[in-house]
Length: 537
Image (cartoon, rainbow, N blue to C red; front, side):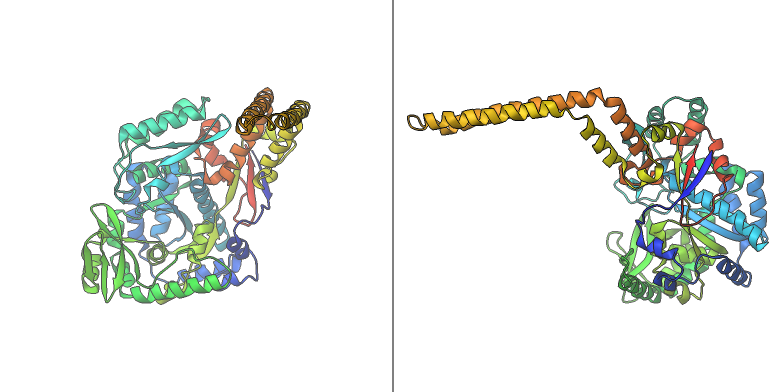
């Protein structure tokens, strides 16, 4: 396994500016990403009071059904004693979702290890599972590669309700079929039988999307002690009571601050990632497992679809007595993390960076400091088959990530085109056109057959087109192997015109290289930076 670091084309202006030392975007955060910021943030956290012993107990309770490894136990004890935390999170996707979920976990683990050494204080890794999210269409599928093409494979069970991932019960038959179909696409390797059996066993023990996700993630990262917590876990909701109260009491000020900050972000040349409104309560009400976004108006909190209308006093009572009926959104989730966890840094992707750029006034409204935002690692995995094809086609991963494979394929197809046949057919068409023109001149003096003649001519021209298409088709088929190789490179390295990590599940690569792949990736000398990490397997 070899590691290469490259600079990729800038596709996200905000992220590119975040890595710049003097860009205007830094005014939207309390910290830049540098060593001095980590020292200052650690000093700040050590002056705050966090209920880390209680938090560690809750995380232990959540993780016990999945198994607590020796390293996990060590991190739980360190958290109990006041360790700082590197946090990253993601929705509970099937087969852990796209690779970037695993890349976030790797980023969290490596950054925690790095900062523990640099700061000479305990820093533990934690993965916040956004089990409260209800966009099941975003997490109920994965992609595989079939015949050098990207293939979508979905879990067939659907629901018309906006139920949370943590409360949506899985259909075992549909889940088993999804897993078997997906693994069939992967192909048979020396690891397939045991890996498939392991995934199926975890599936059969899982009740919900979040349950299945947690089992797989714990299995992959147990040797490294990744702490995990589902946002909807009932003991954690009880732990959050006082913090929900703070969000409700400061609700209007938070909303107004986010709206103003988002406008500043737009004025600075960036988009409005949230499209925040002043009446958005930034809290969901949970009714029968469904989430309903609350709107604040005239000191009341309502949702017409859920038929609920709370006064602020009633909502505060709800937070105190039944906090499991409340849920955070993109604005309040980072605030809740900051109030409940001593977050040294939050690891996120480009989308999350944009959201966080709107939140500085919200943090300050609650008397909080923004944690350091750490952009997750960007990683592309290059299999041995792909390495051989890159060499054969005299191209590179960097060129693939710059979307140049399609152009190379087009050049190849142009090179193999049968120009001689094309020219001969074009010559025949021109002769035919000339003969029809002569014939038309002779006929028009005696007969009214112009329409019939035009129809007859067009028929023959279509036949020439059909013949040309058939020649081109057979020519392509004769060069199918080479063309498939180009398409394999595209599907593997830049599927659907995007990064591999946004499309494929890690199980595509675990099936080929075994579960030790995670340990091997964590052993590489990778660190968070503005580089793209290319891993040659």
